[in-house]
Length: 113
Length: 112
Image (tube, rainbow over all chains, first blue to last red; front, side, top):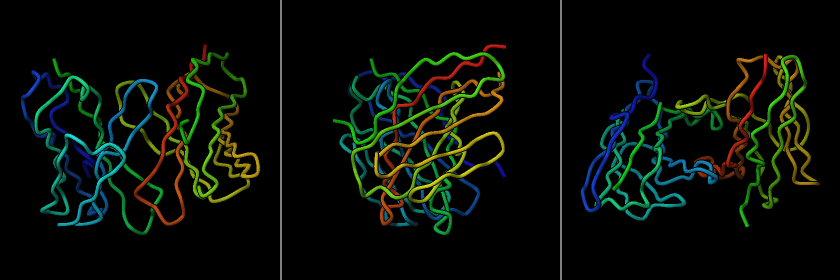
């Protein structure tokens, strides 16, 4: 199993550009989440999904969209990038039966100029 | 005020020392308490979790929860250089499995 994979590893955007961060998992996990990690702030939940076709907002959803058309994939879209979105983004997944065991991807380092 | 507070460190100790990492929290509704380890430029990985108060041991790691004081700890015995990482505490309510609140992490360095 590859676990949770994220692409790209690094990305530089200009203000106003849009892009999609990809996340995929091969563990057949129902639950997937997106977090951002900033210095001194810990991990903050952006959006999450409890299954294909179902998504909900987390703590810091503004400026981001998600969709979940398959169990495996959970892309995160930045609609119009802003410097405040410079961060490291992590995708995570878990089953519904082991609520506390989240598996994280390796992260995407995004810089918005 | 943040819901979860964690001293960012850095904390540097000699190999073989006992390490104590701590978090405080303000929301008494938190029931599950987790510790994650994050190596540099990697994603976090779950070390262990506990439910409500008490202790839980896993090898060299012991997690403690004191709900009356809203204080959780992770102890690492016989620390090794490979334990050098950032340690994140995390917690959630019983009914909110997807809404986990993380501490900001403590950076730990074990000196050989």
